[in-house]
Image (cartoon, rainbow, N blue to C red):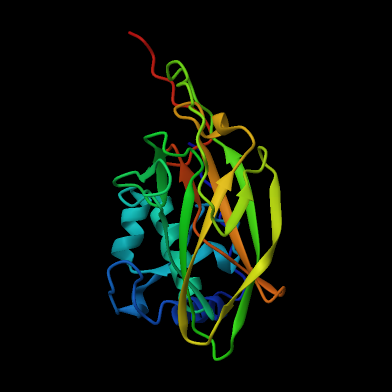
Length: 255
């Protein structure tokens, strides 16, 4: 295997200081505090990508576990996202599924992954929770959603979808086409007082319910939430009908 080209990180001491402040001098995984021996890790494993968003400071043990693939890249991305949000005025807490009002359940052992398991409704309804850590009142004004469909193989015949009356949810966002991004300006802004946690629901829908039907429809959803018509907070990706993100199908030979 060809060795990846490693580009020296520009102003590495300054970058290291920024990353050390971001983690509060403590490994984001094991809370080791021997920061003098910490190492800079490239999250996407591309040594030429030296953007701060792609760098994280880790203890040597956790860095080694990542290199050996004992820790998955999605977990590292989650650490970085939590660090960014923790140091932001708007802190993302969680995304869950409203399984009482839709037919989706969380996939056990997977991060932010959900699957359709019954036909109560095939339109997923998400609960998003944030905290406004700022000293001012803010408004939730926009929701941006990008969709990427995952490749699927032969998964059996499709299941007939019954006619269902959809529940009324405050924010309804249409499922974008493959690779498309939809930015929805909210008619009813949420007013969030300072130092307050807030929770709201987003239902993702389409004119054709079959677009959500398992097992042939698997998606990666990327949500961004706009505040005060000024800035956006990006949350971890959401997986539908899949426990992991991937680019290609794994082919197993028949022997």
